[in-house]
Amino acid sequence: MSADRLQTFQKAYQNTDLTPLIEQQELEQFWVQYGVAPLEELVQLIEDNAARNAKIVFSGHRGCGKSTLLAKLGRQLNDRYFVSVFSIADTIEMSDVNHINILFAIAINLMRKAEQENIKISQAIKESFYKWFAKRTKTETELLHAEISGGFNFWNWFVGKLKTEASVRNEIKQEFERNITDLVAKLNEIAAVVQRGSTKEVLVIIDDLDKLDLSVVKPIFQDHIKALFLPGFNIVYTIPISSLRNTSLRASLQSESDDQIVVMPVSKLLGKEDRRNANPVYREDAVDTLVKILNKRIPSQLLSAEMTREIALASGGVLRELIRISNRCCRICLRELRRDPSRHDLQISSDILEQAINDLRLDFEITLGKADYDILSSTYANFLPNDPKDQAFLDLLHGLHILEYRNSAVWYDVHPIVTDLLQRKGLIHGSS
Image 1: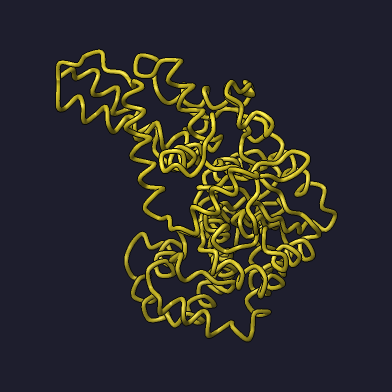
Image 2 (image 1 turned 90 degrees about the vertical axis):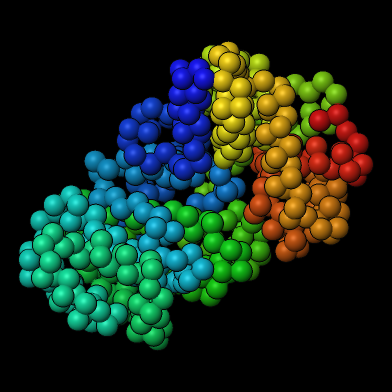
């Protein structure tokens, strides 16, 4: 087996992992200028808020690059703000997220970050916080035993409890369900202590709320939006783009946030007017950005310029899909190398890309029923479904079967791989 080729493909496979760029080293290695407009809008809303307590809702398609952009935002503002960026998925079991444990998670992550950065907080205040959290989750006995062991980190221990133990989350819910003001008061107290110790305004960025099931989003962001917006410091919340199609939910978000909703759009590789042309004119600046992203992750000896472009076009302009397609190609190539060790010059070819896209087409297909195909066909024909508020349409939007694009108006198109599926089933006829 060509050890060099195998190792090069292994590295490319690892470089196309679907996790966002969070760490500084990853950003330095793989960052390509992307999402400039939403980043600038987020900065403006945070820095120009006179009360210093902006509540911003950040939305966009799953996988459009929000997490990486939020990590970039945090680093960009780190010299002027005490920034706590965390994933709700790393703190709370996603099936059990509610407005109470979101606020609780903010408090814990603020203190954990303060401890990591050695912010000056008196031991007496720290201990009062420990006792407050432990008492309200009935973990005082466990805390006493844990403190005896060396190297004990209360906040890491508590995040682990919150993530894995439903009983702790239930205690929190019962404690604060009718007394949310007590939780918010403690949260504001923590923020004030952190602000004094760091001499910086507090900014909390909560990622991965946009990955919640749609049935969970409405109770959190409509029924309890006022509670989420009570804390007296800057917070950026993420939310699924499909949720913004709900009239009452969007109205609540606009009202409570003072219309501070930022949407990260999908990159438009084709204008609406070119979508069904036999020889479309691509927006080369958008295509080139995706090409640069792949060039940073996969060396040219494995992926030619022509194939890089083909992967970019198949992504529909969604970063996650760009990485997912290329990762699937690398997986196929690694299997090919193990099957035939003599292929020292193996590259990602059109045949391999076709295999990868076929695999992903099947992934899309297994979730679809007749009503879904009707919605997809209608959206393809009209760039808009018959009913944009239909739950089935919202599910397809959430699942990336349908992509939302924006210019002077909002319009929709079917993911290129799903378009191929519709054509194979004879449901549509087109050139793209």
